[in-house]
Length: 193
Image (cartoon, rainbow, N blue to C red; front, top):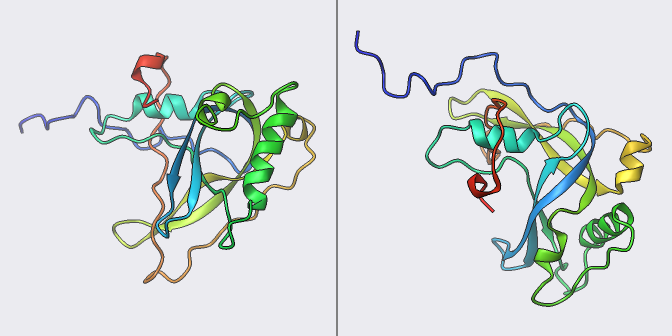
């Protein structure tokens, strides 16, 4: 038998350690502005785990991903305005959580808004979400579903989110599961931002 292409890089089952549902102190890797499918303004917040046993979880997973089209494993999509053009509670919660997690931090409105968050801490509540795999079976991914202050997470003053079950398999759009995670250092130049 001829050795298959990509044999050395292929993941061995059992190497992937899923992120448990919990609260984590996170570092903001990037914030960018974009529009939702419906044309509503939103931000996309790329996070990594900043403290504890899972520190650097998404960076390690990104580095270990051997796919050509790899993606960062933790992006939170947050609408900025509701249908009436008013600030959403989720957006205000994100800003307030970052302010409380970084004493003296004040958001810079305008052109520097997105860049002012890079490297700042924020608390994230991560919960499991069921998704439909390409073969039709169901799997689980762990996603940041809400923000809190880093201190709230450190003090354990939160409730772990309940599992979110897939809706009807015929109408549910599957989430992208987290890539595998090997553990080697990665430089800033190798990250997608």
